[in-house]
Length: 99
Image (cartoon, rainbow, N blue to C red; front, side, top):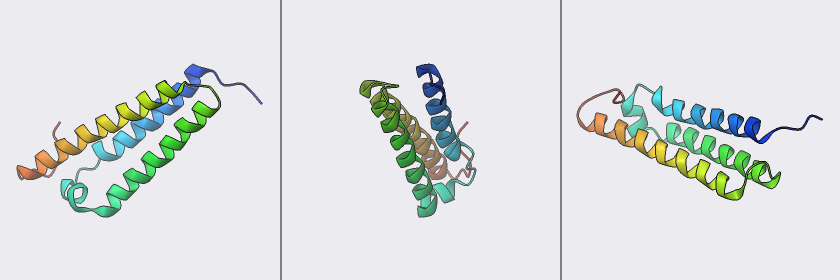
């Protein structure tokens, strides 16, 4: 089996984090995001899976616990911002994410 570098592992984690952000960014129906439990559950499931990937990388000592916590905190912060944009757009009668 080939060894994986820290940079390769971080790249994979960042790509997966970007995929989760894109779930929200590409959802054009704000009403669904604002009122659809299924969409929230999809994002929650993705976040849980991502947190398990981060934990695995920490356990393998590919990244430090501090790096893992930062990656998760940054992603959660960005997702909160995206959700706020959706809810603000929805509250103003918009049906798309603010760009």
